[in-house]
Amino acid sequence: MKTVLLVRHAKSSWESFSVKDIDRPLNERGKKNAPEMAERLRSKGFPIDAFLSSPAKRAKKTALIFAKNFGRKKEDVIEVPSLYEANLEDFEQAIAEAPAEATSIAIFSHNPGITEFVNALTEVRIDNMPTSAVFAVKADISQWGDFKNAQKEFLFFDYPKSTSTQDRALTSS
Image (cartoon, rainbow, N blue to C red; front, side):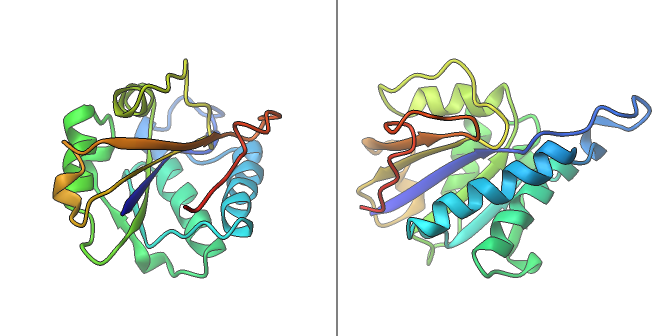
């Protein structure tokens, strides 16, 4: 069994329009929401074995916050250049190339691609992946290369402003 957590980066700053998009940092809300979402996962005993991130500053910082919350080092965050402005094939390739020993991976990326990808995985549909949102699926596979064609099972969708117990029903099964 393999699990994929898709995480949209935390809220980023638009303070300076002279900063390139890839270099935009997290804003104060993002710095608050990312650790809260990481803690929600960790406190429920939900494991993350590998952290794959877009090279964008806001995505990488979000991944680093999650990794730290899970007791991991910054070196444990794997930068995947194709996760910046990713399309369906880019997500599929990143998953296929995930560390073989990992049974649960978290992928940190951006809209609109991440919303499009989560909607392609199962029958569950969402309008938008809010910042710091987590969408999780599992597949009965032993190798990441088999994920693309495997039947996926929706586990949960959670985001900072979620009040729905269904959204926040975290399971590690």
